[in-house]
Length: 465
Image 1 (cartoon, rainbow, N blue to C red):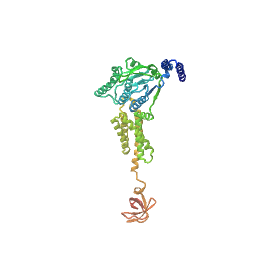
Image 2 (cartoon, one colour):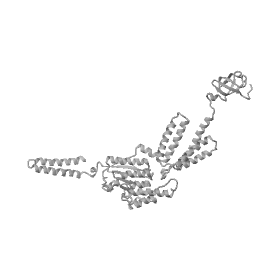
Image 3 (cartoon, helix red, strand yellow):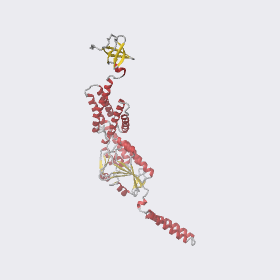
Image 4 (cartoon, rainbow, N blue to C red):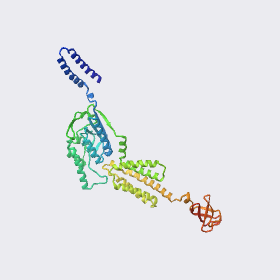
């Protein structure tokens, strides 16, 4: 198809050239004038004849699928996608949004990246049935173009705590700060900042239709293809006040996915998985310490513990919850060494359940440890820890069966009369022996001390030859 249009243009140009050569000796001035008139006209015809899909060749739209909780890993993912779009000179970035919310700090940094993007950013909540709740509302309103699919919702962005109501003064401070942050760019985008603020102060939520009617978003589109078709050529005002026209028609959509590292880290950012990894790590290291040389439990435990610590370093961890979990582990160990008839173990289970539920102070349920996870860990953890620690405790109390310490208390037979010196048979071996009182040959003796290659023995009471 492209070759056909090129051939037409080339033929037109060659025809014009033949005319010029034919008239070359008639009027050089006239020929030169005709040549310059025909060339632009020919090129214009070539461009006009090209179909729209060919004229749009080379354009790229970078699509970022943000279908996850907002946390540092997803923040880095979006920032990398925006950087990719800038590097290739993309026509636009399209962020497909589907999130229950997330961490406010990560949300702020993500919004900053979107506002500073040199490439226009279209944010679309879709497909139908998904949501952009809590932190997702902040991200949606930060786009150059904010769109939603029918059957989606957004809003409900009030700051919350995992452990009940926030004190009134602190609640007011957090809400005022969050509201000011939302107004700072919503009004600049020309959207309804006053209504948007109600999503923070009153936990208001909006359907796609309600958001569009109240000037919170710019339109409703059912799919990515509909976004491209309906908003091609739309002029948008960037955050810095400049105007740009969206050139979307005929563009190639490049899906920018997470790297393997980002997918792994995003998975372990789930507090439930992070807690499970932490418990596996502690058990693995304990088995390796008590049974050196196995290696496998130590390697698995070390990797699991490091991944768990990475996640908890990025999550809002509660110090109270952490202390309760450590107290639970201590109670399990003490239960194995002190006969408390299960009281300490029960206290450890209660402490671990309470600590696990309080461990991560997430603003949404998806960023908190669930009760089922804690119970599934606390009971097996108590049984395994008590069992292993008790085995170690009993092995340390048990008398050694080898070496010098294994001889003490052993029974033997006097091979000769023993007073200051003599011979005894112990463990099937002859030993030089001595005793503080005379012992007749053939009597049973008990070893009380080992001194080099000699043993001190005493008469075993109750024995008669």
